[in-house]
Image (cartoon, rainbow, N blue to C red; front, side):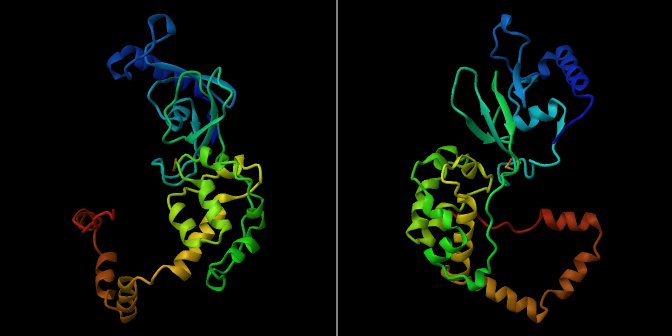
Length: 262
Ligand code: FES
């Protein structure tokens, strides 16, 4: 992310707008002598900014003049690109959150860590058996886990990271795959691990091994691949690629959507 030159000017302009149209501002929790209504003070990488309360960290950073060229993907809590660390005044604890999901609080002192250098093994999933040995060959540091639970405490997805690392050490690939399914790969667990384990890369290896070697093959997928090989959809795809945009939009809006599984 980069700070644009006109950050302060932009901030002042937006504050002016809020001052002219108080109904546009978020409701205030601040007392009259605590500054302008609906404004909180935060520190981004050591620089102080005043931003409207109620914004997510990501929006507050953009409001302050930063633009995201890295550290932002989905803005919806799915991609894991926006890991953020922060402290609150008077609290010794380092807190974490996703910038697109965490709302700013007055006094927050924050920075983003959109990338964390970590050990990343290269392997051929088809040739890798779903065993403890495969996990250890690719990530021997797995055996260094101290069981301190720091990874669990830091996970913004509330995953039981230490528990699925314990399952990994037992070679229970299926349990690791199921327990880590909602991992966003944000990297916060690895950033705090005293054993320098890369929990998110170990667990994605387990999920790949589970999908390739343990989970039963999906019959509907096999059927669909046969249909594709037979060329059953060639005419339909040709029709779509030649269709005007408005027609494609209509078809998209009217598409069948599968029910979410429980
Ligand atoms: S931007 Fe994707 S999780 Fe925050």
